[in-house]
Image (tube, rainbow, N blue to C red; front, side):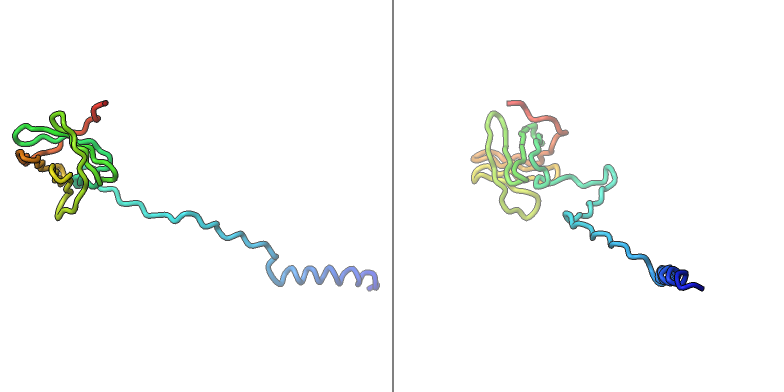
Length: 144
């Protein structure tokens, strides 16, 4: 074999040997960019099986109540359930959420609204206490 042929063969053989010895170098993919943490979604109960919302869960919601004696009033729950705007017979009172053993209790020191589920009790200052009040089907608040 001539020295020229050997000189060309040796590098070619080295390249072929090295190519078979390992993997070809490739750049690694960049690690994923951290994003906001994902939260698992809450399970959705089957239709019709969800418990009624408490007033604390009724955020900025308008509800009308009718009591056993026919007296009715409206409440707009505001501020994440921390306030209740009570409207009745031409009067309105802004009540604040106070601690309660069960359900939600709102008062301004004179008027008190206690609500749990779709029921409510309204205590007026120097007047009657309306018991067994139930929320009526939802409708839009009056424009005013």
